Length: 449
Image (tube, rainbow, N blue to C red):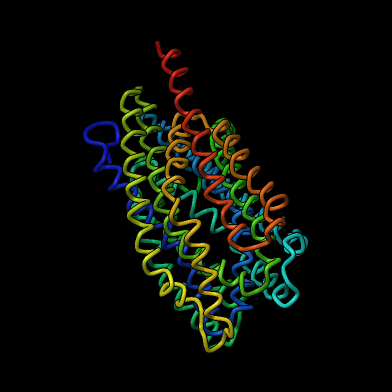
């Protein structure tokens, strides 16, 4: 895709739609886990899987964010037509992903039990939650490899190949879920193993595609090594993005801890609703990443005015996409929640569905505010300016949610009171990021002059 010349809106859509579909399909791994467990093993097993969502997000997001740094670095080299820079970045990214995944697997296995203890997971859920997490952690190397490989393709404007690979592995995931749970009579360990195997398939397929390429992003086994200068650039841009993702996970850990205190039915409801609402986020995030990639290439080519247009068009597309995606979820919310809840196994299925609708109401309706956050931070990241947006997100999202959970929520102690922290934290953070972007562009214009 030529991101430097021609129209912008249609190319952003062509880039963002497969990227959003990729994120949604990736989330379907977890949704399939929840659905199979909910239908065949009951609400307690579903709560065990769902309670791990913020934990896994915390462990993964730092390095997934660094993959965005690889995206930006390779995009800039592409805009500058620096083939050697592209080659070094690709081989550095692949090895760094594998090493990081191995380190995180070891670290995660060590802290798994203490981390779940901090979340106050109920005793009737804890053994299954720990088992799921330990099996899931074994797949970190291939999960990281897939994300970095996808970033390599995205830097060239190609979001179709990662989608194809993930589609294949997604089908395998569903089949393996049913086989492990229904045939082998496994529980949470079965769905975790299915997710690990499916991630192995998707990362292996992408690796084969990269080895067979004939252009600058081709992988040659003998050239795989870490170039320190390239890694420094990737980490400089990507680490703040990873920290920004971790901010959401840290705050969600605090919220999850409060959810756990309300009992296993609320945990199951929250888990089911999360696996529905997250689809809207992936659509929003895809336009944020589109801004990062488009601006990265145009900034590398020195076309600053086109970078500004990318942000304006990206923001309009993102808000429109958020509103369009939110409406059907709110309309068909109860039907969607029933996919995860088996009334014959879960005695309180009606209560669980009602609690799930509360979460959808508080999170899906104001998702368009989240689109502003993603566009602003994604745009600034494209210029290589990612530290301050991460700081603003930390203060606006993490700070407010932690204060809310420990100072405001105990006053009422209701699920509604807890969920209301999401739109409040989004509005504060969106305003601060908009002000930051405007000031950044003013300073950037002065430097250019």
